[in-house]
Length: 159
Image (cartoon, rainbow, N blue to C red; front, side):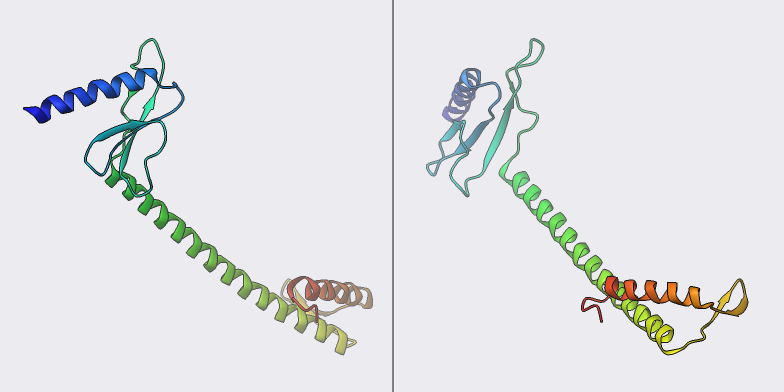
């Protein structure tokens, strides 16, 4: 019976504190090391579980709205879930970076091979629309220029 009176008294005190608090600031409900329930506008000491009571001032809604309360367990679960999301995002980022490096490496190899062929041969044969033909000198010079640009673009050392 004494516990019920204590809980009711604590709830009444909590509502009184909520009414006096600034409308835009949350109220933190937590227990101290002696088991006493505390209501504060500042977060409790690190490692102490708490509930957040968000306030909303309106003609049609109560001052203290407890729809967003979080127990320590739900807060920890949210933190764990956020950590998992961040870890997944970091893993995806590393995977994409590795894939991009591999693509750049392959593009570099292709660009170097194209440059080598265009530099070492005066007559270069290509296939267009299923037909083979020789590049004109002008086409060869344009492709040499593009191959040099691709080597600079895809190869880190530019060589």
